[in-house]
Each structure stands twice: as structure tokens, then as C-alpha cells.
Image 1: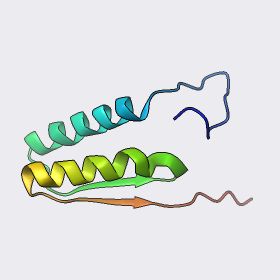
Image 2: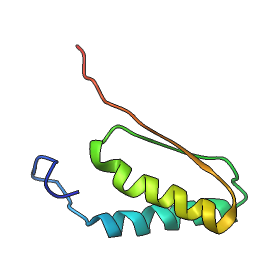
Image 3: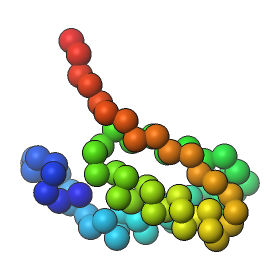
Image 4: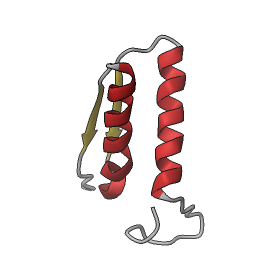
Length: 77
């Protein structure tokens, strides 16, 4: 997501809509393969913008819930 992430040499920025479309495509691909329990885990702050929308829309369309956890990454040495 552009903005909150530091720009690096290999950073690829995509829109929230593009992220939503990508995740929804993955979810439906797994669902069609027979996966019924899908779990997203993200440690990136703005991930909720795409994950929450995908989970809600997928549930309304299929009546199959997706579990997701958005946490905080902590680096300790």
C-alpha cells in the first residue's frame, strides 16, 4: 500500500482495490479446490483495509467464514 510503507529499491506499490481483487481471487481459487477453512495472518498495519472487505464479501456470497488475524510485528534480537 503506498504511503505508510517505506519506499525501498524493491518496493512494489499497488492500490487497495488491486490488493482486494488479488486476495479475493486467491480465496475463491482455494474454495473451489475444496478448502473450507481459510485463515489470513498479516503483520502489516494497513492489511485490514483489504482483508476485512474480502472476508465480509466472501461470507455474504458463500456463507463460508474466513478467519483472519492482523497483529503487530515486533523484532527482537
